[in-house]
Amino acid sequence: MIEGGAVNLTCVAVGSPMPYVRWRRGSVDVPSVAGQLDAPTPIGKNVLQLTDVRQTATYTCVASSELGSIEHHAEVRVRGKHTISAHLMRYGDAEILQARP
Image (cartoon, rainbow, N blue to C red; front, top):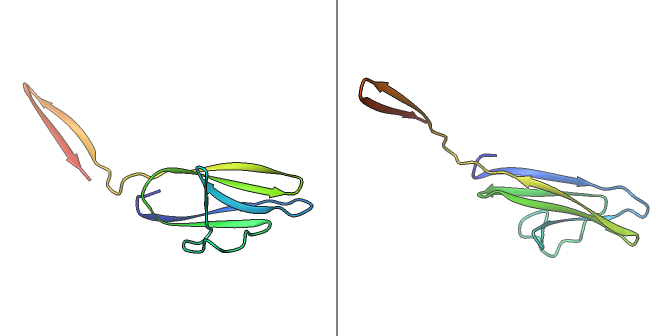
């Protein structure tokens, strides 16, 4: 994704009993919606809304119930806003580097 962009990560888990679904970044729980730290943990489905993403990171969806838990990892890869292509041209003994966005 482009630096500064936004993405939604959706995690769905089904079981009996239905599992709670939460997101983590590293060992830290991440609220599904920024600023809602005290929101209840969703059951069955959780959509993580990431905005203004600036760096590559791995997020982990954790689905758990009284019978156990399972995890799945998702990597959000960020690339710079600008990509420059370059071409090296040689004219005799001279070298010219031509670059353009």
